[in-house]
Every structure is written in structure tokens, then in C-alpha cells.
Picture 1 (cartoon, chains in turn brown, cyan):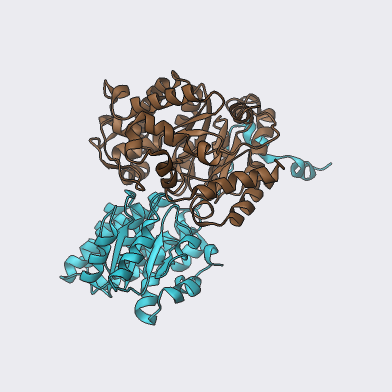
Picture 2 (tube, rainbow over the protein chains, first blue to last red):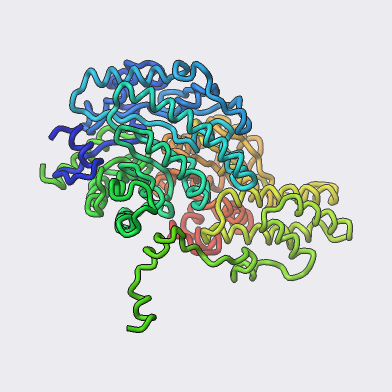
Amino acid sequence: MNLKENLLSVLSGNEVDITPVVSVTQLGVVEAMEKTDAFWPEAHKDPEKMANLGSSLYELAGLECARMPFCLTVEAEAMGVKVDLGGKDKPPQVLNSPFSSADDIAIPDDYLDSGRIPTVIEAIEILKEKYDDLPIIVGITGPVTLTGHLIGVENLVRLLKTDPDEIEDAVENSLDACMDYIEAISEVGPDVICVAEPTASPELIDPLQFKSIAKPRLEDLAGFINEKNVLHICGSTQDIIHDMASIGYDGISIEEKVDITKAKEDLGKGAVNLKAGGKCLPKGGVNPSSKIIGNISTSQTLFTGSADDIKSDVKNALDAGVDVLAPSCGLAPLSSIDNIKAMIEARNEYFNI
Amino acid sequence: MSYKDLEDKIDQRNVYLRYNVELEGPAIKPEEDEEVAKILPNDEPFRSIALTILNENRDEAITIVKKALDDGISPLDIINEGLMKGMDAVSLLYTKGIYFLPDLMLSGDAMMESVKECEAVLGHKSDSKATVVSFVAEGDPHDIGKNLILMFLRAGGYEAIDMGRDVPASDVVEAVKKYHPIFLTGTALMTTTMTAFPKVVKALEDADLEVPAIGCGGGAVRKDFVESFPMSVYGVEAYHTPKLADAILNDKKDWKDLRKEYSDVVGGFVSEYS
């Protein structure tokens, strides 16, 4: 079984001999930029460089995927938000947005040709050409996070309490933009699409509102993606694991703050209920529970930890039954390639390969 | 088999699922929470004022505070006995996982607007205890955490200097030279930007400057990382900030003490420091 089949097989719910080790989140690190000569910010705009950096950790460390882009501002930029692409170790960030309310949010006519959307699509094509058996993971921005970029996160969080209807409209409009983008990237055939939704984290919004406002839109999005799909939410998501897992994504990506054993228990309960409850939950029986992806700490272990720290964290995660081994969040750009290698070696050691 | 025995055997989750309902907590008002009840003042008008903060009702807070001021109640009493108690209760509910970030922000809005009303009557800003400088790490556009810190610091009687977001280390050095703060706070949401903190410490050391402590915190930031460089202390929650500043100001604590005595300083169990 090659790397691509192995990952897709896990996400399809099959048992595999070796747990894949990938990154569903940002993986550009400065050391790899130096070795591939694909530096930020150019790698955000140049398809060739984006492809090179996206597959750099496969080439240099043996990570079992290619993953792009390296930020969550692609869609927002194409919709007309001003983005500062940052520097070598400084990620892109939203500067200001022309939108202030839900009604303002409109998809420009040339949306799919604007900003860096064509770059991402071209980069996928380059990678498809280059690798037959390497899974290509594309990260997209979730509707709530996109809304945050468009009308400002602080605005979003306040309005969630004072005017939830307005936010529902805004998220609905953002969802349309997400879908258009997915349609465009689907045409070039990536293997996995990872929806990153950091703004829907319980650290920002109330779990009940995650359920009432974010979940239905994420559900629509999951149904719309034909590829294997993953939902990544940052922060301590323990309170919403059950909701995340019952949306219908093939995998959910979690941070180190989430206890995998407990999360698996929550998922297990969901699966039993789906059978017992019949019609109550979507996709019952077809996709009883999402696979768990994670959760080697990017802020501690992979960034500043020693090889031993990484080994023990990897062992703990695998013991707890993680389905796909991955960094817990976007890699810090100053993380060393040696630490990524250590993560993969620790996995190999665990499986005696 | 009695019904009671049978009931114990049923997995209630299946029942909820069958009827498409969900088990939620008891529907109690925030002020009925036992610990909140202990914090809230019993005397009017302070109780009503605290309650408007607890209920995140900005307009009503301003109305009641204005009326209290018209009735000749001391503005300082309104701030300390009413508004602050309400905010303490909000912080408590946040710690307990009943309130969330939006609640903190809206209660904060209500409180800051009310404080402004009080200061207008006072004729000057209420005396500030000392100066604290707050910044968001270079490259990071996320400033909700910093804004909360500002709000808690100002409510706690500090002059809080807002340096905004995406602040380069050199600007922080300039600010320290200019304001001589007793405490610095730096926040970062992303793993990709928290590396700016050691750079700030380095820049301060290079400029031969020292502050008693730099409180570092935010989304991806972890205690181990913050403690890997000097002059810093990991801040767990935004509302801990004024308490840390108090410890520096009153008890002459520095970053080494704060790392050791964090739980005592903020007065409560903090899992990160246990």
C-alpha cells in the first residue's frame, strides 16, 4: 500500500497496519525554505515555489503528504480583503476588510481568478504531475473563520451575542464563497481537503453557538466536498468533540489540549447512538464516526522539544489510539526539520519499521 | 424489576436521541450561582449595577449608573462596589465554563462605558496605580486577548498603554523607555508568531532595560515555552493580569517569584501551575 492509499484508507474507515503521519495544517518551516529555495512570502504567490515548499517535508523529512497553502487568507484576499503577506518567518495576515456587515459580503465576479486562488490550483496541478503516490492535502478556510476575516473577529464575536441573525446571514454568505473555491480546486483533484475553522473554537465562541450557527454550515460544506475531508479546529475543543465528530467529516484534527482517549470515547458513543437512534443524526451508519487526527504539540514538542519529548508524545498519542499522527496545529516556522524527522522516526519505531 | 431499576439500566443518551433533545444544565440565572451570590453586593444601587454587568446589558448599566451618580453616590464606590463586583462575577462564570469569550467582551463593554460615566463626574481619571504596556506579538493580527487584558487592567486601576497588534520588538523597547512600565503583557494567538516573545526579551536585554516581568499568553502559547526564556511569566487568563500587576507593585515580586507563586497571586487553583 502506498502513502496515498494508506492515508485514504484510514480516512475511509478501514484498518491499516501503519498509522500515517501527515500534517493537515500549515507545514512551511524556514529550514525547509532554505533547502528548497522557496521562501515566504514568494511561496504564497508562486505556484512552483508553493508546490516545492508544500512537498518539502516529504522530501526532507519523510512526512507522508504534501500540504498547501501556508495561510488562511487565500479566500479572504480573493474576496477583496487587504492581506499583508508577511516575511520569511512571519505568516500572512489580514490588514483590513471592505466589509462591515453581513449584507456587504458578496462574492466578486472574478473571485476564482483573483488573488492567490489560481496559484493554489496551479500548485496542486504541479504536485499531481510530480507525485503519483503522495497524498496532496489542501487547506481551506471554514465559513466562520472566513466571516471573521471579512467583518473582523471582534465584531463577529460581539454580534454572535447581540445579533446572531446577522451572523448567520454572514456565515451563510461566506459559505457560498467556500463552496465556489472547493468546486474550483476539486477540478484539479487534490486527495484531501482540510477545512480549518479556528474561529469556531470554544476559546472564542460558546459551544452552544458552535452547534447552532457553525455546525449546520460545516455540515453543508462536508456534504459538498467530494474528496476525503478533515475538519481542523484549534484550541481546547473537548467540549465540542461530539458535535465535530457528528458533522460527517472523515477526520477531525485536534490539538494537544484535547485528550484523545476521552475524545475516542465520545466518538464511540456517537456511533452507538447512530445505530440506535436511526434517523436522528446525519449520515447514520455510513460515517459513524470521524477519525482522529493529531495531536503532537506544535508550540512545545515540535518547536522546542527534544527528540525524547517527541518520542514520548508520539507514543502516548498512538497508545491512545490516534488514527492519523499529525502536528496539533500549524507548524511554527522556526521548528527544525530534525524534530519533524524525530516524529516520523518515533512512529516507525512504534511499528517496528 | 421495579421502574427505578429499569431506569438505571437505560442509557439516557438514547432516550434524548430518540426524541431529538439534549440534556443541558439546570436553567439557573447567573446571579443564582452559589459562588456568584457570594461575590455580588447586597446593597442597592450596587447590586443592580453589578447585575447589569453580569447580564451584559450596556444601555441599562449606563442608565442605572447615571441615576446613581445623580443621587449623589460616590463614583469610586460605584466602580469598586458595583461595577468591579459584577466583573468579578463574570470572570468567575468564565472560569467555570458557563460564560465564554463573547460574554467577557460584552460585560467589559458595559463596564468600561459605565466607568467613563463615573470618571466624568469625578472630573478626572481615577488615580492610576502604575503603568502597564500591552502589545500583540509581531506578525499576529489577533488582538482580542490584548483588548481583554487592557480592559481588566484599566478596570483594576492601572494606566494601560495599548500598543496595538503586530508590534515589532524595537517598538516595545521604545515604549519601555518612554513609559517605564512595571509590567509588560504580550499576547499571540498563533504558534507561528509566539516566537516574537524571546525576541522582545533579547531586544530589551540588548538595550540594557529590564522590567519586573513580561506576562506572555494567548491561544497557542504554552507555559514551558514561555519559561524557556528569562524575564517572562506565562499568563493563563486575561483577568489574572491586574492581580499579577498588583503583586509586582505591592509586594515587589518579579518574574521569578511570579512563576513560583502564580496560583497564590491570582488567588485560586490554576491547573497550568499545579
